[in-house]
Length: 117
Image 1 (cartoon, rainbow, N blue to C red):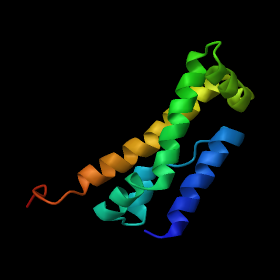
Image 2 (image 1 turned 180 degrees about the horizontal axis):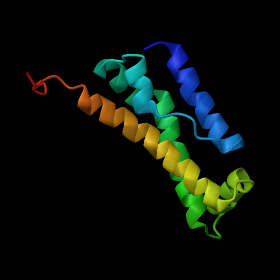
Image 3 (image 1 turned 180 degrees about the vertical axis):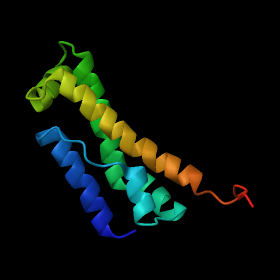
Image 4 (image 1 turned 90 degrees about the vertical axis):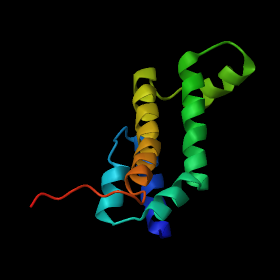
């Protein structure tokens, strides 16, 4: 998988945080570019995927709230995002990871579906 895919994913994440537009369905995108299971697994193991997981954890803590120092830093970082939008962004990011996992699972070798005659 080339670097263009990672650029598209990162741009869609930036759009989610800045304009609250969620334009990427990673599963469909992988189908369109005819990505292999190896490509999906490479994305799952990539630093981009780890960053998405970190964003999800931070947004989750931001949504929980709290008065300790960690939550204060999260309020400073994500305070410009209303909590309903933060929930939508978190769901979008979780969807990206789930799409990659599902694509990898669907592309596993083994039995193929029967075709009707």
